[in-house]
Image 1: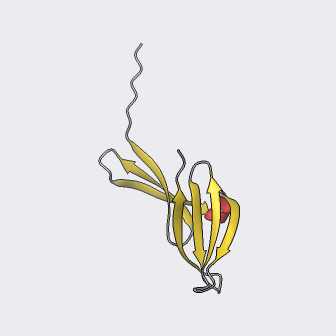
Image 2: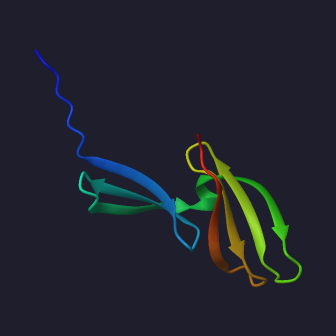
Length: 91
């Protein structure tokens, strides 16, 4: 009896500009087979800290996760998410 393993693609997780964590399944040629919103950064990651830039009013809320690393969710003075930034990736 022989065992054959066929790798059909890759699963990647990433952030969008709205603070969502998405999972994308790619074929072996790099085509997107499916994409799913797993949840938001605050739902899936542990809160670490807030830092506010007083000149711009932008608050960077930092979160961490063993699988996603450390990310910042940027929000304005109204609490609206204006972007995300990856600070470090897991090794």
